[in-house]
Length: 333
Image (cartoon, rainbow, N blue to C red; front, side, top):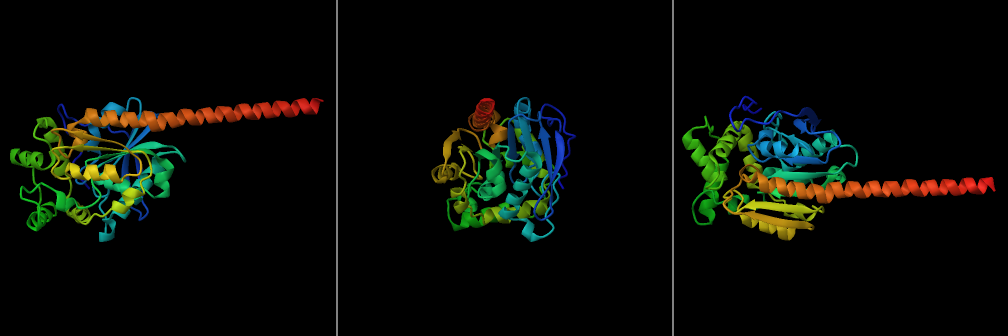
């Protein structure tokens, strides 16, 4: 499990932990889940990316929990979710299993939510798009800083011209088993270069560095292989719910070309937002933009559906009342 706990302090101290839930995945893996906000409020489910944890969504929980039910969970091996015990546990299939388990553990049967995925979290949503549990609960989706294939080939973390040499070096860098060590000034500079825009605020760089450095190196390496061989183009075509895409124009890990391809391939894309000067960590670097897009999706696809369902229910009750009155009048005659 991650070495990072909730003992951070200062202006970027993490939000108060929500109600804790344990979801049990198809292979028995226990997934740590936190639920913030009032029962009955519109639900938002947040899936974080590679080497991160529930702490990554601090800005979203702070902004949304007042009038939403915000559900966050640690991807297997990250945060407080146990690492896979065998290589089969590192797969997009396992990620999709985990997401289905989280939805089943936190949402009522048939309850709809907006699902948000950042980086590997977005890949999790793509992998689950044709699953029954996903279709039951997904009202709309937001994909942040993610892609469906060709991640290593397209990455610009290594400052070389595209080609086999850059791909080989990138695969070696991202798949390294070396420990990241403590968060030092040099470590922060490296993390900012690789994952964030040039104008990222120092406190946000610090927060991301502490989260990423807390990921166990065996877990980091295990998932790096999955990302390097990722192929979810077919699954994107099966993601048949309204889906918005957000990307940073300064993203070196998943350059904006991925977002543009997703926008073209998605059956029901409802918009692509490109953020100037923002890198890979869009929910941390540009929380206002990401939170605003989440709010729009909730209003359009969760609350609107709820109002429509209530209207249909009221109409059904009224029709039954009229029918019963008619029966009583005939019986009286």
